[in-house]
Image (cartoon, rainbow, N blue to C red; front, side):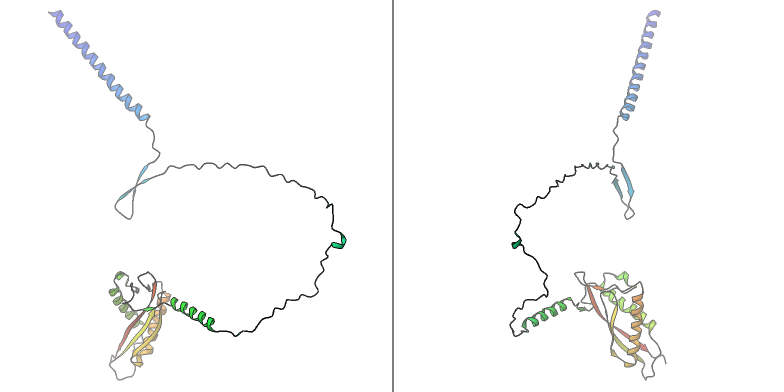
Length: 270
């Protein structure tokens, strides 16, 4: 009985040792396979770079292209062509002396006289050309538009926040221009028996954003010259300033000359 127990124990120990060795070999094979396959992985030429875009919250995946060397251009050298220099032989049958033409200089240059007949000059063609030229000139002249007629209203400095809203831009234009006018207007009230003086100013804004053609249209004569001088000062300051008027535009994105009015009121402080 003792011998059979010892034999059974020995067999179990030998089996456990065999299982242990088999497991160890399996682990070693797995490790060897992992490191062996990593060494054989082909490197990808294109790298993926994640770039944060400053203008949005998204991320852009950019692919860096590998540098490709340009093929060398092989210049083929061609041999220079050989120039065959031939000697011109003398003419066997020369021209006889009596047939040789001798060129003599002309003493005086004469122009041929061509008879020209007299005709009556017709003004019809001239008038037609003149009419066509004036028609072309009229086509190039820009038409003057009111704020209601233009598609995009002119933008006065300080009214940029209303861009796209023609009604608010028109109101802001008049308000800002009125403020600049009051700063440049001589507020000394003339010696007249009136509570206030009113003048309606007419002017235009050209395609470059300049205030032009300032005219005191109607109102009190005592204020017309003062109001005109004040608006001229405003226009001069705007032309010299970096902040200029953005000109009006039409539907086809072409610039238009804008005609406007502005009312100047000077109240008597007495």
